[in-house]
Length: 250
Image 1: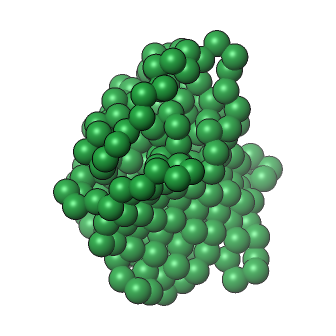
Image 2: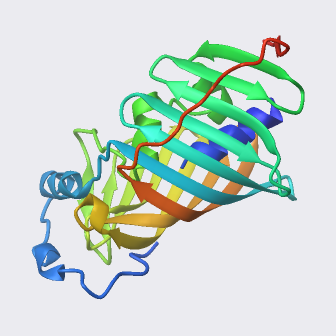
Image 3: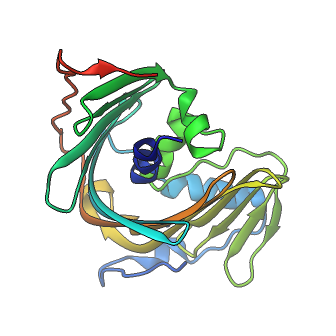
């Protein structure tokens, strides 16, 4: 797999406690408890955020086969439209840029002066999991949707939901703090949403400042993503102009 594409997906994915909370949180809104999976999913959905824009600056550590890589990434999302990513080396030089829409994946390497445009199905080849644009967007919003109809429910000490292939752990504020997606015995993606904080820009909803990602597939790796700046509903500049001198690759 192309190493830069691997880094791209880790960059944008962009997870077990409720973490740091501001003192002005009104916890009385969360005192009532969920007694079954249906009630719990309804409460989770009520706490999910869905901003028109989100801007995330991040520091990312990737560990693969005992080798650690550190990069910086700027991530911009326009709801239901585009996910834009710029990845930079430690010295601030842009290594590559990518843009993902509902139907396509765009990528260009500043180092090699190459680019490609592929169908959105290319995401599955890269992350070794069946992830759509909307699922990726929901993960970046820290609001993964739970759509399974048959779910096992338990509530000690956190809330737990389990289906045939997927597992979820939910905190007392009805935010998902861990999701585990299993495509097969040898393909597993786990995302931990960590260190939640509150943001007035999205009605005092909670949002994590750190994601921990583990991938077990043909390749095994993990990543730690720390958000250094988080902004909601602020229109961002999204630019993806491929220079004429760049060479198209497969």
